[in-house]
Image (tube, rainbow, N blue to C red; front, top):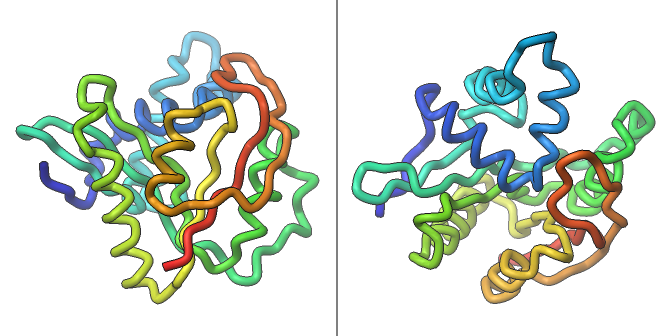
Length: 191
């Protein structure tokens, strides 16, 4: 397996995997902005191909297995301080996650990590977590953060095994296509 920086050509894989990691929330938002007859997934592909913003291929690392995309991680340094003065402009379903993000200012934030089903159980996510730690060291932060649904027990177990601990939670606001209920959990790892 090989980890590499993503390129614009990876946008289709990134969009698919970000939706998987995002518990269906990205597709929900893409569908909200789609015009009549427009495929919401194509909106996600266009967004992944952007050169700016947090959801951009420039913040993604891809892992390949035999020259095939196996998974990806989207991560970046959180602002410090993290400004919540505009929290009211965020949709209700996003607000809990934004509130949790703000509790880890200056951390290397793993916004999304996902593996294609056929590549699961092969160490892909573990390798991507290691890559994220290397990026955090390069960014000179000593804290990693991520958010996971409490009902996503497999992912939560993986993060706990990697040294992440739950430090706070907020209830999931259910939306069309929501994969898990329960709570959003903010998990932190000190490096």
